Image (cartoon, rainbow, N blue to C red; front, side, top):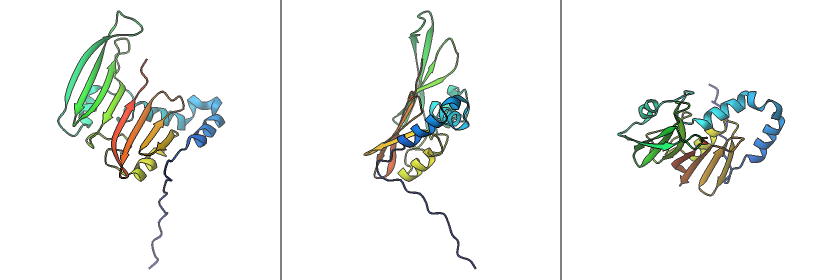
Length: 184
């Protein structure tokens, strides 16, 4: 019987930073940037990291939460046209918050902010509170995203640096996930 051989797991050095590699990649494809499949995949992930659908609705976020939650609703004036009244929805659970912006002119839910401290809502690629640093970096490397690690924080953004994911780590495990999305 032959011994089984498995590929060694890649390990990531402390303070991982792929900025130079990503800048080189984006410079190489500059003319095709918006059409490149890797860029499309990265943009789709960073603009909506929680759900595998292009235009999510509030109910789909609520279905992903695996615990009791509440939804708060607030109205605000649209910053571009004061005649429009837009709506902010907050989905709260386990000391966590997901905020969705619903502008009157698009009638689409847009993820604007999230602060996740619970494993009861994971990202669409399986990253969740409690996963290891190794698993986190391994799953993020599947996207052409900028990844920068400092001390106990891993920050991730796309080429335009409009939307961010921040992963807080403690003892090699993800303790919280913050998301800041670009909403205009």
